[in-house]
Amino acid sequence: MNLAAIGVPGLIIILVIILILFGPRKLPEIGSAVGKTLSEFKKSAKDIMDDDDEPKKIEVQQVDAKDQVK
Image (tube, rainbow, N blue to C red; front, side, top):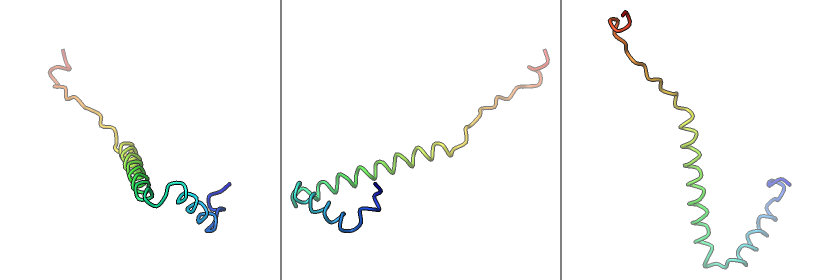
């Protein structure tokens, strides 16, 4: 089943069921918790993607010519 197949009437029914289950006083708390969770998830996903984009730094050691020829 596809989420797009639910449509507007289905979303309204889901929202009414949530309102009945949790009540109007709990909805702001639930919305806030969901928002914080989504923002944390987005931040973590962005951090992971940023870590992959950075090229690996290779440390190059300089060697004196005198040390090479012994």
